[in-house]
Length: 396
Ligand SMILES: Cc1cc2nc3c(=O)[nH]c(=O)nc-3n(C[C@H](O)[C@H](O)[C@H](O)COP(=O)(O)OP(=O)(O)OC[C@H]3O[C@@H](n4cnc5c(N)ncnc54)[C@H](O)[C@@H]3O)c2cc1C
Image: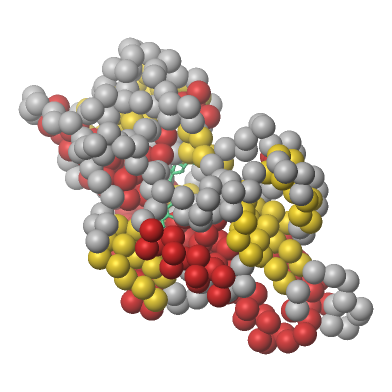
């Protein structure tokens, strides 16, 4: 039986596991440092208090048990991969493989050139940070509510640094929540403010003009103050200083302006780009390592015109399926074709039951219909995982 190790149980790792475990000639070991799969794409709703923990986390032990008997889950952190030896070291053991898939994703890039960034901001790339942010948000709302009885003591100002997909979704959902508070809690909710800040000239830099224009309009309608071309040079506990020396006070701040590859990649001797992502060959194989493939956010993935694609769950899953099929082909001595991909569509949640979508760079969807379509995609993804979790839970 061939031993396949998948490192990382994110969107890419799970898709690869689901496909490969159908082949009974393979034994799959899925390794993750956490006991759960984190649905990052839903974190905007969790932070704003609309979803709870069970909407964003899936138990990996039950999930793998539900997948079959030829897959094992190990909760451990992979610390090293031996070059050309097909050996993986975790914090507790060393494991040999015939094929391995690197799917360790990315983490928030707390740029060192912004003084105080890591110390004073929240990221959302892991559950603990999202949880801390949600708690801070709820605490401030609760404090604000208390001001009804006592003397009101000033504004609540949330700053979101980074107006890419995640920053925009979080800002919109929080603003929507605050709007609800405004109606229900009346005057004690006055002066709640959200600012969305980016160094680029627009929100959603690099996306289609339609998405940029419509999102900007919606964000403004939700009362969000947008600051573009705004370069942050320093952050202290309660204040941002911009490059032009202007200052902005805030109550708390979230940072979503950049990612870099997960820590493990930094230990590897293979070509990488400036955010530390692996540059694999056209078959997504990692140079200097035998039978090791790289997928998802830890990898630089390009389209047919050699444009670097933004890191998304969609591309993580597509690359995972391609690699899983490549492993099957290798076992049958079939030649591998280069990985070719493109983004099929983008959906952006913009607060409440409003979303925007763009399919195949042509078809535009807006409002409630886009919200329903986005929800369906997430529900479909989650439903597939839950079926396995339920089956696995009953086997415990
Ligand atoms: C707020 C937000 C909103 C988003 N919205 C969308 C969206 O609407 N659509 C979309 O397509 N994408 C969206 N994304 C991007 C999407 O979440 C990522 O592209 C996707 O998670 C990448 O999948 P992955 O499998 O490469 O990595 P991940 O999902 O990050 O998984 C990596 C896994 O590897 C594990 N790991 C890391 N290092 C180790 C180690 N050394 N040993 C063991 N395990 C390790 C981690 O614990 C993690 O479980 C969003 C992201 C954020 C933050």
